[in-house]
Length: 543
Image (cartoon, rainbow, N blue to C red; front, side):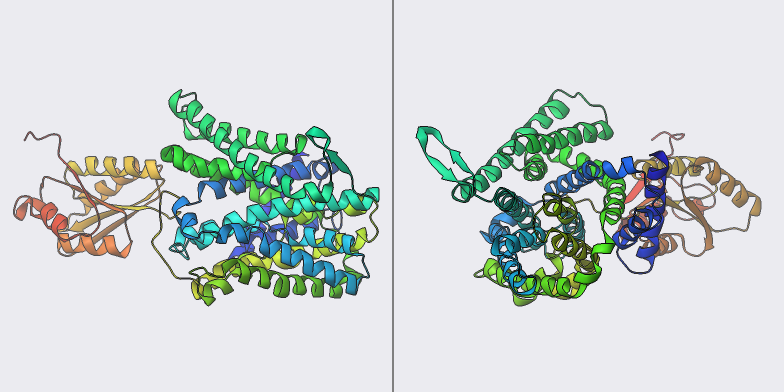
């Protein structure tokens, strides 16, 4: 098992990065690694790991849904009215129905079996859609109208609907008749009649349990302070979120995945600083979970069942997406403020399939449903076609179809490399400037540009400054630059060139800078720079 995890993590990571450098989504490389390492080709993944692939994928999906909840914006969702709710039902329902009718025509399925296939294919993949939408939010695409938030919410709701309908249809096809449920007062309802009640119960209880879990996390982590750092915060939150998913499998009265997403959403409202810390922690967890999820997803794809169903399967996918989903998208956004370009974005932004298809695609075959092998083949095909396309299309078409708005840093983690500029001379205060820059860099994992403006040619002093820089910034990525020119102008020019976040400079001048007017360097930089300036006062001199 250890060898298998080494293969999965290392090879999956590097092949994913190769795919990224080739301008393809990283998950394409990860899925290919899974196919190659899996039982279909090299058979290098331990059977024990393959047997545990379903719970491992469950953990990964839990992580990404918590990330989704921690990135939702209540105000943006409120602006959309019923759009998010309609996106949760209409596209999935229309796609499932169109696929059912197409399967009757192409594969000669009965309606129940065709609708079973529609439920499997119609489910959206949180593993593809959630990272894509969160990245759009971090870049500002579509945020003014809450388009990423609406897609995230609709995706979670649609999976609740389709998984419930899938269970009902599977039960009907296996048992040959609908089961009945006896309610209080002796009222008996068929499974079809009770389905709306189940859907409402799953959604409402999922949201309520999400709120309860969020309040529990605030109580434990903030008010009673059981944890001491962000890692421990993330450990407790992830454990409780996973507990929700496990309990939903044992007691299917609520949607565990919706409860996880709701937990993240309510955490933002209850305690924004805690939500920010958890957002960072779950970002780190997703780095590992993403590799495990997509490599094991590739290993689960059965290539041998694809050959005879390739062309009909592509036709089924095209009908479901271009007719069924397109109709659902139109009805979902009818009467909204979305323009036609934003509606068009739903095609690349809301069509990816992966995790649900891998989880339930083989169940009909295992349960002996007639046509189960065909269902499995089309489920596998949907993963291979739509997951890479979706992961590629979301960042590609967003700039072409969506408008860019202001990013809300309280809702998403904005990932960028931070650079700090330390402007130093050859005087003793340089040590204090470098120490301050190092302190800031360690807090934010930043790089440091050490800038020295040469006023007099004194190689020994410059070499001593370089040695001091190397000693004080030994554990920090840094670059030493020595140039000539006007001191304030060069500081600002270099800061703009390297797009630094902060400028650190000494407040009191010494040779050779004290040859200019006292305080003129720091004062000139303060007055001219649009970048924040941090002044380090010489603590050797009294005021």
